[in-house]
Length: 214
Image (cartoon, rainbow, N blue to C red; front, side):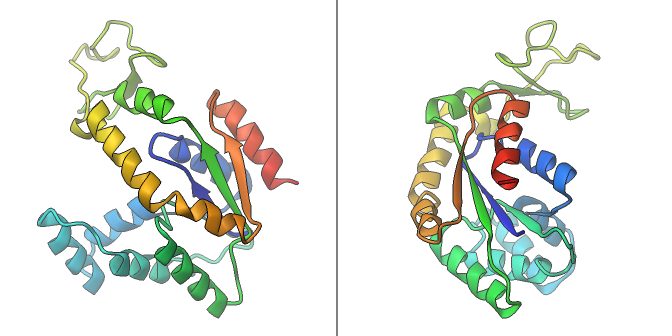
């Protein structure tokens, strides 16, 4: 089975992607991971990517599609693959369908995590990090023992620059404009399954398991 994990930033895709791959053995294809790996390589696409990102420019659909196309059939799996962070828009979705059709494959299921914007903003804006170790906290859901300080070292915790409410809302607006149209696209293909993304990670994963095992 080939699946797509769809949802706005802060919807819990990263956590559930790990759960799904651990439970079912899918090859996880995360656009973020693929872009980082390509950025560090000396490939033709990697050099183009480096020039773009170092210049503060957006990565084009063409480059993202090229990276996905290169990686998608690299790791053969009898279970299938799970795409996380791709496609982001209808043009990418159509290109994905075309590249899969060449291999006589298709997307079997799109899991859409449903989370209100207000919850997303609370989840992301409340995150705090210990930079040296990468340990993460949340002011509401996973607070440190002493407010604003790392439990192990006592160092001050920081909020990432793009985790403030204004930036998060901007990211959500972009998601609604570019990625939300994929809901109708995959509904028409009868492969979209909506999952309630509110609750503990275990509760949400239980709903995902029910959908995958039907």
